[in-house]
Length: 105
Image 1 (cartoon, rainbow, N blue to C red):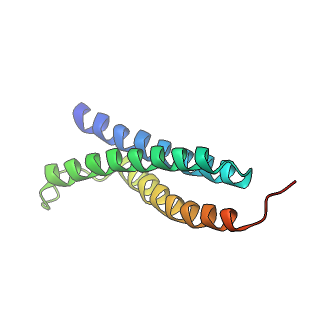
Image 2: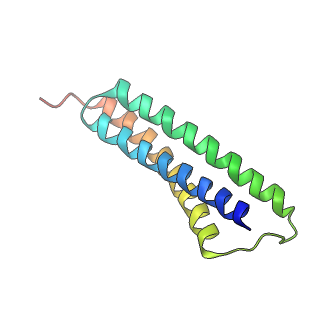
């Protein structure tokens, strides 16, 4: 059970880091720092990749048979991952829009 909790926390931490990096990228783009924004988005995508790997491992442990308990922290971790992915997608589009705007002086 402790291993399961550690794995779920790993999912939660990586998803939270992905979300934070995507929001940082958006703030950087708003300031016209597009290279730094792209670097933050790359970092965000890497955290999502790691989180997705953990999610895949959890699904494999469950084997579709309900072997893993579904508790609030598991749902919370999944929610963080999905939010991170949505924020990442929207941040990418918004960064592109910021690129098209004239620079703020």
